[in-house]
Length: 288
Image (cartoon, rainbow, N blue to C red; front, side, top):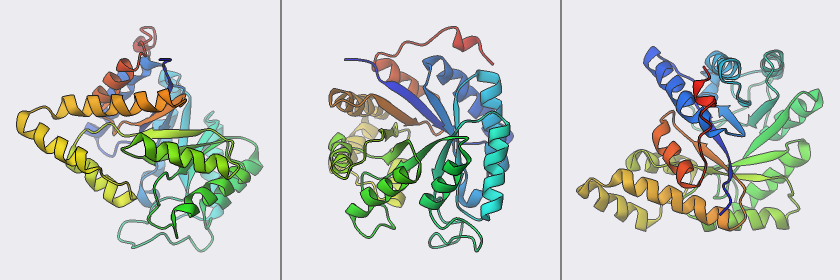
């Protein structure tokens, strides 16, 4: 089995303790030589400044290629493009362009009166600058706001046509979920790379809560398996086995890239990528 290309997602810290955790996570995972890392943008743009600071620090101190998240939420078009220009000035050449979740307390996404109405509009505006490689989100299972499952493929094609060069999916539990989506995208004429998003299960209850919010279907076998593992104190072993098995199946089906949602907790992700045959670059472990 050929080792995949990998990438990692981090989120910006909002406290001193969280800051230490982020830098520990980067320090642990940087030696795995990721193709890129991404830094999220809090709901409603709440971590805008923190995201920019984290992106700049990771790029400067670790020499990693960083893709900064940028959303349409709670900002005008001019404000959003100013943020993009600030990233460009900091040497950032990749952006993950997303519609974004509804601000805290809001039932659903509502565009800013002077803002971008969708991720398609955001991608088109960023593409016009010619300054960024643009990645977008993709949903192998029906997005909560989608009219039907087909709409997720249609929206992805619109984003690619607007100027995005690749997509990263929401997490999922079954390899077949991604493989069916990949086939549907190919049938729709989408040729850009679609990178599966992988969520190593740090907490089963927490993961189920995430899944409920984003529409990911939870297999009964996993629910039963983690219940049994909890009784025996084997949750960590089951998490490692489940994630490694999922990734291995994807690789066997021709997937060459995997994007890991680390939740700023590096150990499980590190163990999974090692199990997939990725050897740490010891020279990178000395960077910081």
